[in-house]
Image 1 (cartoon, rainbow, N blue to C red):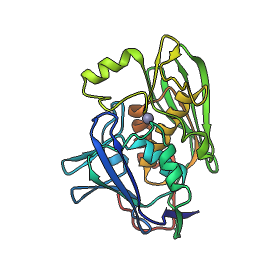
Image 2: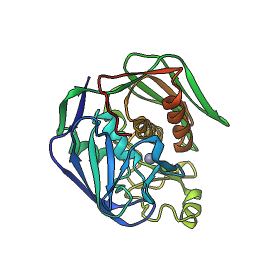
Image 3: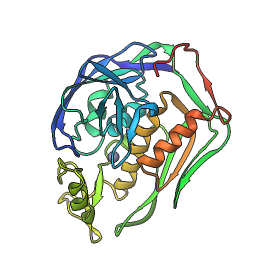
Image 4: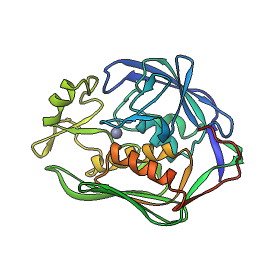
Length: 280
Ligand code: ZN
C-alpha cells in the first residue's frame, strides 16, 4: 500500500461552526513521510494525537501556543481517501470551515486529486484486542486484515439503535452532517460554541423531529456522522490502521483516549512499515 498526497493545491472557504469566524484554507501536496500538518502563522501543527489539546464537541490541535479546531471532518475524509501527506495552510481564521456540516465538499474536491507516492504507507496493525470505555460508551479494536470501523448509537426521539459501517467506501459516510439536539443549542452558545451553527451546516433534532426543512439525508445520518468523526480522530494515529474497530456511543474524548491507547500500546500493536523517518 503506497503513501498518497494530492495532485494540486485545493482551497476551501467558509465559516467555522464554533467560532463563527470566516476561514480560508489551502491544502498543499507534500512528499512522503511528511504526514498531515496544519500551517498557521508560519508554524506547523501535526495532525497527531500528541497534539490534541481539547475534545469538547470538536477536536482541537495545538503547538507552540497556536491552535486549530474542528479538524475532524476534513481529517475523516483524508483518512477515507488514504491521503497520508499534505499541508493544510490557514490563510484566514483557525477553525476548519464547516461547509455543509459534512465531509461532502472535501470529498468532492479531493476524490479525483489523489496522487500515489513511491513509498510504502505506515500501517499500525492491531495484533490483539484493545478496549477503552467511559460510562456506557466503549471502543474496541480487534485484529483484522484491512480496516473496518463500526459505530453503534441512537438518535434520541428518532432512531432507537443503529449501526453504521465503514469498510473502505467513503461515500457511505462523507455525506453525513453534524447534528445537535434542540435543547443543546442555547447551552453550546452560552459556552462560546456553535456560534457559526445554522440549519445550513447542522442538523437540529427536537421532539422527535428534524428542524431542517430538507430532513435527514439518511435515516441514520447522525450515526454515520459519528462514524466520520471517529475516522477523523483515528487519522491522528499518523498511520493507516489495520484492524476492526467497534465504537458504542463514543465521542471525541473517548476517541482520543482510544487512539492514544492504541498508539502507545506496543504490546498489542506492531508497526509495519518500510519508512524510516516519522514526522511526529
Ligand atoms: Zn462532527
